[in-house]
Image 1: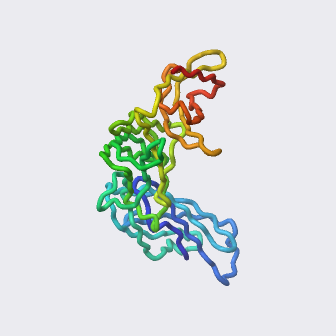
Image 2: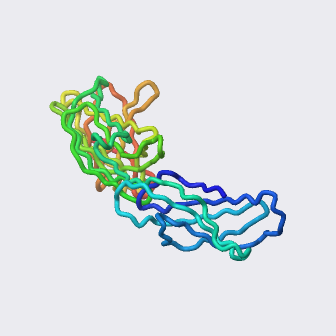
Image 3: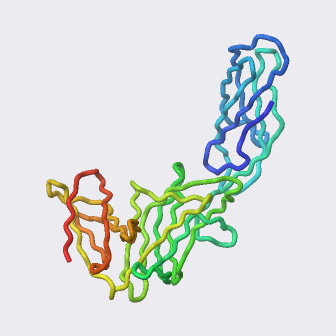
Length: 292
């Protein structure tokens, strides 16, 4: 009997175990025989049976259980048992195997949370040089089942990172993030960079995601008001994204809310080309009007 399982599991998720039985040279008709099986964790059986169907080559058992443990990183042992009572054998058990239960975290990197998932770097939009800024973030962080939301501030750095306690050599893991970043620096215009929940940013511990963020100096920019309307001239809500266009490439420099059709931004009007798009709650044909 061989068991397939993941040696690293995340707290709060169902676990899946697979058991395969090789009957070798035994010659008897077991086709269609159905029986039950279960998982025993730390000598405790606290989950339902899963039916298994044998065939001529073996058997496979899949059992999902939710670990009844608090949020902490622990090691535990399991074994699989399956019922051969139809063959007057009773329950047969695999050998015990060990797993590590992880209390997954996403936070500002520190001495114990060391594996980067999001690297943020800050640049001058005109020169492309690194600048020191302050960044206040309010993120929803979601893996499809659980939230790891984070609100924090960074002060006076040219780059910052968020990390997890999950080693990518043990288990690769992804999250979606959305929310806003408030970027500020002396002599620069402040920007609120919005990541919409409908188009979240993917972050991962394998590899970490890189996010470049830009500010423009007050002296180099002009304030612009944007109006977003449908082709029926109805104002819309959503997120406007502004891209700087250079040499057939474009780089996102701002992502700002559109409220009742209106959005505001500071851009370089004289020599820089930009492109725009808008993430609406409802997909519609839109018309953009700029007011200086």
